[in-house]
Length: 476
Image (cartoon, rainbow, N blue to C red):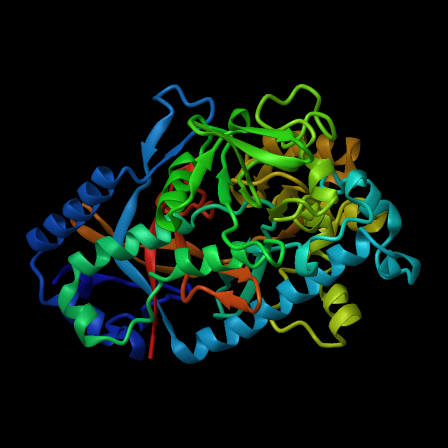
């Protein structure tokens, strides 16, 4: 069959140890794919894409002249992670989230880590995600980062790295759940014969995490998902999660601060809201506290939040831990708060605000990936080896003009895996975004979102940059 011709090349391949040699955990899957004709594979790929289309699994691209709404491309060849390897990843992710939560509590509290000189204070105060109105904030249970999506990659040797942390409004988990639903129909025999850890309980785990934030003594807390509205790139996910949890999806105009509480407008009058799962960036959530021109948020919400009369997940101010300059200090953060070595290593990172490191970056732009400290979605980034001379010169000027705003990293040879492309399999680069919930305990969804760079040779996996997704199987 066509997968017999697949050559993993000299990259680390997620399914093959070498040409014609599937990894042990992938053997059953590869045997099943080999048993199917090309026409049957094409039929299953099309059926999977059609199913996602009917489910409305879409995302929006801002400024796209082809229309705002697109179907998220999906590939039927799943990524497989062994349960043993997953157990180690899970421990490393829990360690990281625990340390970052302690860091956020400290930064907005006593700031011991700054007084002890572990992180330069000016880096915190100059971070766009650091919000002074959140100083002395005491979120329920002392938890700041309730929902996190941490991006992981592998290099050519198979070593895992944390690429970045997403602690504000991480998106993509809806694709994990819908991809799994579709894959059960695509490869039913494989599902019946392999012990694949389920992801179906994510919505119930998320709801439990949110209910854990409600004030004690409330008999029936009201939880809502707060969305910026239908034009947001992740609106499908907002509505999907609200529906899965059986709670209301609201916009800022549906809410009002009245009688000292946050209230929701209903056909029966105002109803108190106790917990918000917010999918709005901090600066837009309250025009009285942050951006005065925001039409998306709720005037006065921050004050009610500070008084402990409503809970918000994720807590306001968590964006400071998303800053890619702060990311470079996570090994020290883990050592400082937990007295442990980092289990999951960071990608080596150059800080352009330090003169000697900036000189190195400017001299090696053709070899490095440069990222803006607060951008996401593949924006504000230069992949040096794939860039033109003019693009590198432009980024050099940006770095010199605003050194605090840029980091640089080596260009990793990201792991690849077979991807079905019309009539053959070819290797495409992938990353992995597991989702972590921090409630009474820390829960990591088994697997996560595998994003795939569908453009040949591309290292950029983001959906906004032409990427797609795969199901991720954690197997015994």
